[in-house]
Amino acid sequence: MNRADFETLVDEALEELPPWVTDRIDNLVVLVEDRPTALQDPDDDGLLGLYEGVSLAERGLDYFGVMPDQITIFREPHLSLGLPKDELRAEIRTTVLHEIAHHLGIDDERLHELGWD
Image (cartoon, rainbow, N blue to C red):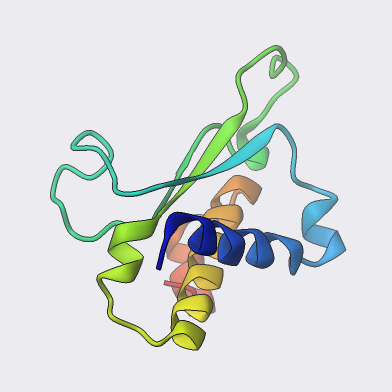
C-alpha cells in the first residue's frame, strides 16, 4: 500500500472519532511516517504508533505557548503485519484510538483494562 492510501486510512480513522473525543482534542498534530527512528523505538519491536506530548490530564495553568503534541502512525510496521485491507484498516483505527487515548490522559494500564492494547 502506498503512502497516500495509508494516509487516507489514518484520516478516515480520525474522521470517525465521536464528537465527545474531537471536542476535547487540543493542540495536537497527527503524522504518518514510514518507520520509527532508533530513538522512538530503540528495541525495534514493531512500534505502530507513538504519542509525544503533555496529555490533557497533565496540563496545568502554565500550559500555553507550547508546540503541539504529536501522534505518529508508522506505515511500514502496519504493512509488515501482512493483513488484508479490511483488517489493516481496523488495525490502523485501533492504533489511532490508542494514541488519541494517550492524548486524553488514558495510560497503558487503563487501556489494557479496556482491551485496547
